[in-house]
Length: 435
Image (cartoon, rainbow, N blue to C red; front, side, top):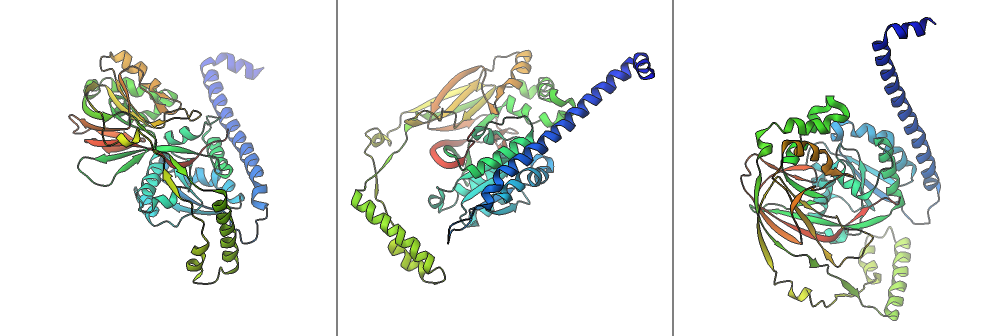
């Protein structure tokens, strides 16, 4: 009775206490559910690690590039608690490489021995470094069959969302699901955007999008308003609407080429040749098993390696590839965006394309505040009121008044400058979700 009387006499304190108790209970319940899910996932992969392997067969080699600085320094804790137990129970040979500074993953990729799988454990920046380092290798064609997986440990995990659909808003659960996807081995081909600056230098590669404009500038300051909690993404655009730079339209000139057909290769081989190659493959494996200790085994083993002749299919459209129909365009926009991998993967396509959009620059402050948070849909940025939408395979952009402005390339910042952007279809083999 005294407790009920105290609640009635102190309604404000009682309401505040109830809210705190509800939030605390929800937090504890979330931790408990994460623990149960972690136990279930570890138990589900435990039998994989205890299965015997065949004679002379090596465990699967997985190299993980871990960015400890991702997610404000929380990445290592998240990895050790949610991803590492599943990986080590799988029976695979796990090698974890921790980067100590920005760009180090690119350097490691240039000297890395070929594993069975490469995993980027971090945010979009970590994935971008691993992909760029891999594509810059002079022997990349020998690495095309190596799948790349992602463990989402960053604040922005746009690329991982393209490959998996999290079933929960709990970061720990998404990390465990993505780690389990690595072991299931389902993959899909992804296009690459190759970005080359007009001033020269090494190319940069991207998987998701390139953004330049007012919405991009506002999103960069979202974490500054962390004290607003779930309202921070709305307050970001409220405060941004008072800045003069946000109201300034961006001018850009571009030249583009319409989407080109995807090159196709046809394999020519008769049954007799296939039988000879299968026999040679068996002899090669047998020779390797019996002479693994012999220092000259590679020279002799090459005599048993199978080879398949491949020639490009004659394509009348491809013969005209040297004669491009170049279109020129001048735009004035609030936000300029180039997007890759936006096609429906369940449908067969004949052409690979980049989607280019320019947001309407005729807007009110209320429109800006309302549209800003809604541009990010299912992890991808989308133009809500575009004045221009085109598809192309290659474009050259020349932004005006670039001083002090930045491109966002897969959520990573690069200084804005004239550049060429080209789509390279089906370039990478990425691990995706089987759900």
